[in-house]
Image (tube, rainbow, N blue to C red; front, top):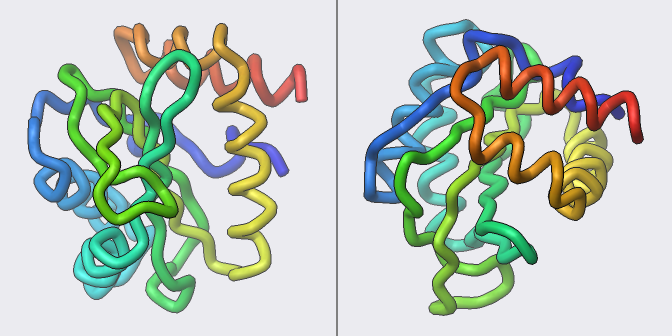
Length: 155
């Protein structure tokens, strides 16, 4: 499964927000504005993040992969958010371990089966330190897309 097929320039966001739910709201709004998700997606995503945190500590930076139920999705997409400042998220699988997140991949996948496959692909991507650092240091949507494209060709 190729990440690049689900990300376009309009879904690449740079954020200076410092609070997790503010950032998640902004990203979900971009997905909704671009016709990728329904109006219920944002609230469902936030509720899911509270119950099932999505922060991941990697060797290089903290990453989050928020997502919610596929019935809120109109058209499969992935929004990528590069954070100007690390934002505290809770580590996946814990209730209180904090991760300073600098990069977010918000999944909006129409087929529930695709979600697992995409999560596996993202795990491969986040293990590639060069790609992750290139994404973290990206100065434009084109830089983000080029890094994802490079990963897609390597994978």
